[in-house]
Amino acid sequence: MKVEKPISDLEIANESKAEYVLVVASSGRLLAQTARVAGFKPLVIDLFADQDTQYYADDFKQIISLAKQHLKPAVDDFIKSYQVDKVVYGSGFERHSESLFYLNSCLSLLGNTPEVFIDLHDKPAFFATLKHLAIPYPPVHFNKPDEFEGWLIKPMRGQGGEGIKHYLGEEVAEDTYLQRYQTGKQYSVLFFADGLQVQVVGFNSQWTTRLGDSREFMFSGIINACDLKAEQQSQVVNWLKKLVPLFELKGLNSLDFIHDGDCSWLLEINPRPPASMHLYEADLFNRHVRACLGELTNVHYKINGYTGYQVVYAQHDIMIPDGFLWPDNCLDLPETGVICRTGQPICSIMSHKMQAHLVMSELQTQQINLQKRFSSWNIKLASIN
Image (cartoon, rainbow, N blue to C red):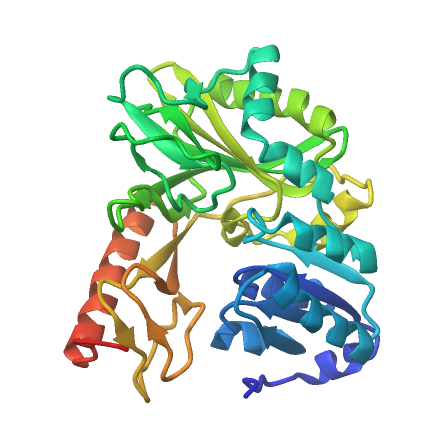
């Protein structure tokens, strides 16, 4: 059942003027929230249909995967039921590019084209491009190397660190590749592009967590704080100035990189609105739409303090109990009775402070306390069939 949300008189007055936009992602809450704030009426298709998504969506549909056979009926039904002609996509399409082609065929797709999305996930061609442009990256192998120490095995079309692990000498599958393990701090840069030019929103620090032998580097959290020097940030911006027109990137994207000592190495480009969108109060959804239409506005994004975002993963199989009271700073809340398997996300937490180290401390404390609360409710399941 859809979670009802209170509507103000101003919202009622503007409701008839608002335009529908379809949001499709593995988790659509962030895009639905920012679309609503931007004045749109979001229709959401995702895999979770959590309480927050229902709150922000005008209507929603939960599907079991973003594969075309599961996505198409939901999209078709929304098109028949609402006057919607625009779609914005988020995470989860790395293995479902056919779904992007379908969305592009029946709606105005506000984001990178399916062709651009595929090009950026063609790892041999992508790293060959970086080499040609003299952009540094950790060395890669697409066949079994002579020695296996110091390498990571990665999926060709992964997301959020899923499937990344230390290489132990096994055969390299066609849908994976090897990359030299590089020590250092992990960063990302959030940016807009109009196909030719770049507008940087901000640099961020991010971190991972280990969730098992095949999930050793899962995305865990991110903060809009960065200790890189100005010249080091300028180097990354220069990378973007080369890559954006070459790949014809559009809209809101992010670039992940790692830095150690005086050197930085590019890891990947996420060609869709990323998790770091959480960290900035600016109207990023409207600016994403405008950038996709070729309009970049030269705006300086002021940061008042620091904001951090972190995913809370299940340490064991749990069922969300009736009456569980979520702390105010929790997001992406599953409904009562939902089962979260070990290693799956339970919810997200956020913190905003005037100092970055206080944000990190609060996120850690919040996560520990939340896990303790689940344990105190005695909701660990010995066996879930």
